[in-house]
Image (cartoon, rainbow, N blue to C red):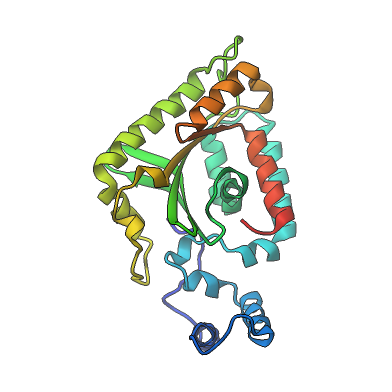
Length: 270
């Protein structure tokens, strides 16, 4: 699924010139420390933010920091809309629909900032990615750090209803999400090539993918479940969350997600 309507295979002459200018500046003869070069590059990015996407592995799935900052006011309004939605009687499907219809993918991408150690070098989001034939992840975030690319699979569950029990144990909603993750983990161990094929559908410019996309490495794969609100969790349930975190599974509530989205807008980078 594409995040953006931009057709990267049908560019105007001005857009082609902007791309070529950036390509020239990436040649070894240019030093990024050159202030003039850096200023010219930022001017191109501000006028043509899509150029950053074009030069990425997956143009239609790249989380663009320049776009993030250019749309700061509208993004704040989007967070406010989601807050109001979460305070009504909704399901996880309503949240997925909201993110898709509003193109509010930065909200999910905000998880990269404080809950992972990757994504600051490069980042992509894949909504409702298929793990055929039986599974589908609500979101896949792919982020890069100095050690390469990493994969974060995300499951959204209900924001209300049977999140935790009175004694702090996990309720049906959280158990359902955690069971889903175990299914994904088993699938990935045996079908990682299938994930690469699903991702490659977004490789519209036929870029060469790094080895992390071909070789299964469990140390590069993490999982995350979002369910309930802050009031659903007490010390016992928070202690369980910490135990799961040690096993590569992060559990958040939707108030965490709203806070991370606000932090992202404030910081201006993933």
